[in-house]
Amino acid sequence: MKRILTAVVLTVMAVLGVSGASAQEQAKAFKGEEGDTYYFIDFVSGVEYWFPVYEMFKQAGQQLGVKTVYTGTPEYDVNRQIAVFDQVLAKNPKGIFLAPMNSDPFIEPINRAHDMGIPVVTFASDSPLSKRVSYITSDNTKEGEWAADTIAEAMGGKGEFAVLENPGQDNHDKRIAAFLTRMETKWPDMKLVGRAASNQDPTKAYNALLTLAQAHPDLGAIFMPEANSALGAAQAAKELGGKIKVMCADVNSKILDMIKAGEVFASINPNQGMQGYMGMLMLFLAATPDMIDPMNADKAEGRNPMAIPYVDNGLAVVTKDNADSFRWDAYLKRRGTKGIEE
Image (cartoon, rainbow, N blue to C red; front, side):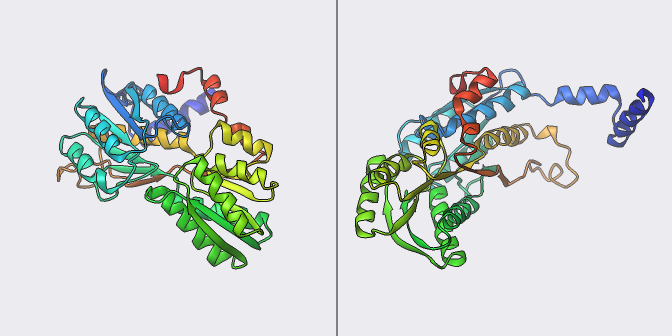
C-alpha cells in the first residue's frame, strides 16, 4: 500500500511537472515579503457585519505571511471615507481591500491608486467604472430574489408586503430592486402596499412600519436590505401584535437574538467570511503578479495576469434553526483571536 501511495504521489507530481524539492519550494514561494501591508477599508466601521470579513481577510493574510490592518470610517459619509482612503494611500500599502460607500466618487481615488501601482479590490459594494482589480460579493440580485421567495412561501404566496430602503447605497438598491421584481414576476398574488426610506436608522424604521401598518391593516411582511433597520422594525412589529414578518439582510448579535426569539422572521446573510478570504487572495495575486505564469499574452503585452473581475462569495438564509452558526463571539473563541483588534 505504501508503494502504491508513493507511486500515486510521484505520478501527480510528474503531471504537475515538479519534483518533491521544487514542490516544496513552490509552496514556500507563495508568500509575501516581510513588511508587506494590506489595508481593509469599510464604512460605518463599528457595524458587526464587517468583522467576519476582516477576520478571514486576516486569516488569509497570516497564511500568506503578510500584515493586515483594519480601518474605515465610523460615519456614513462618503467624503470622510475617501479621506481615509487617501490617508492609507499615502502609506504606500501593498494593496487595498475597499467597500466603497458609493461607486462614482471612488472612481478617481481608485484610479489614482492603480496608477501608483497599488491594486484595489472592492467588496460588498463596487466601483465598476474604476480600475479596481476584482469585486468580491454575494450576488445582490440573488439575495433579493431569495428574500422574496422566503417571504412569499411563508405566506402561502398571497398577501400584502412592504419594503424599507436605503437609497443611494448600490448593493442595498440592487437587493430591493431584485426583491420587488421577483415578487412581481413569480408571486403575482403578493401585493406591494408601501415603500419607505429608513436609511439604516432603527427609529425611522420603527416609525415607518407603524405608519404602514396603520394605513394597511392586512400588512403581512416587510423586507429591508440591511440589519439596522430591522432593530426598529422588529420592535414595531412586536408592538403591533407580532403578525408582520420582518426580514432583513445581514446579521449581528442582536439580529440573531431576535431571530431566535421569533421577533425577526429571517435574514439573508452573505458569506462574508469567504468574502474577506477570497478578497485577500485576489489582492495578493494582483500585488504579486510574478506569482502567475499565464498561458496568454498578458506578460508579453505588459498586463497584470490577475484579471478576475468578479467573485461570488455565496449567501445563506438565516433562521431559528441555524442562527447559532453565525455567532461572531463563538467564532472568535473557536479561532482564539481578537478580531478587528489584530
